[in-house]
Amino acid sequence: MSSSVKNLSEFSTMHLPNITGKRFAIVVSEWNTDVTHALYTGAFETLLKYGATENNIIRVQVPGSFELSLGAQKMAEKQDIDAVICLGCVIQGETRHFDFICQAVADGITNVSLKYNKPVIFGVLTPNTQEQAMDRAGGKHGNKGDEAAITAIKMLAIN
Picture (cartoon, rainbow, N blue to C red):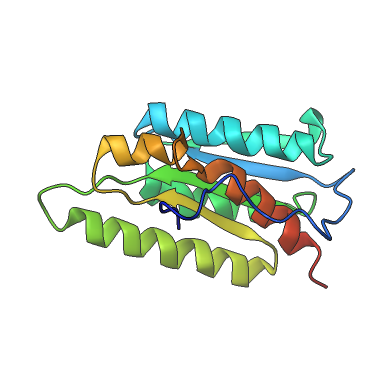
């Protein structure tokens, strides 16, 4: 969670595993494209920075955040994918739709991770406003995509 005291792009890089040869799928929601493209860029660049190769990073587009779970499952079931990163943004609206979508996405991503016994990372922003989303997609609070990529890398170290 980002706040005035925690920047999403600041994290400990001690004890990161070697990810040379590891394959990552990044599943990206097309909804709120300005935000999700920035999240993808952060995740992609972070993976490269810490040793992944471009050929070992697969981008998969899904229509919205609700579809992240199925996109993640399609990638997680592939034997040659080591970790899946899910990136999306659901901005609070005037109805309860926000609550239902956020809960379904969180549950779905968790279930995929447990079903396939591999890291499936929740990189979904749930802000109140577009401005808050942009602040967390490379703005003043860092980039949730960076954090999601580092989380995937760190989870690969768990045996």
